[in-house]
Length: 248
Image (cartoon, rainbow, N blue to C red; front, side, top):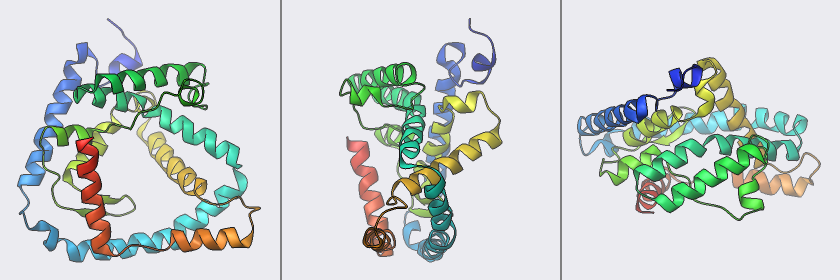
């Protein structure tokens, strides 16, 4: 039996029994959260959601966007792409496990191959060798989708501070997926928080033009960045996207 920090922290020690126990607990928690809220809770949360949406948009415009622009100056686009690939590689165990739980074995195999070659030939995931060299690609698979295939309801739409669109099932799935991040098995909690901050900042900066881009490019970026959809449209798009990802 494997010993050491990985065996102690991984949720899939003891032959996977702990992993199965965690999944059952998450299913029960999600069902309880969803059933415990009235079916018309969408309407009941609209006031809160609209207020939180306004806050998140203010935060994006006045805090996150300036931070992202500063990061975009000090981190070259090449480095941003390497970090994007590295963080995507950390999602490999999540994609493999959830593909298997949904009985999508071919997809699980593709994700397994990608994780193997990207972690070795791709220097820890800094380069997406699986896609660039072998053409291996597959949609991500999350616990949210796994719960959906188990007919666990999505629950009411809710907008969370900073995190944005969510629901009880989506939130529980996000927390559960965190246990499958291999970095979380080795580093303290606060380091993981820093990882999420860096990943979000890198993602935001990656959508920006180069600091040396023309003013016209920056103007076009700002028009698209701050062209927010109406609340009802954003809510309906989130619910439709959730249904589509579960179906596929």
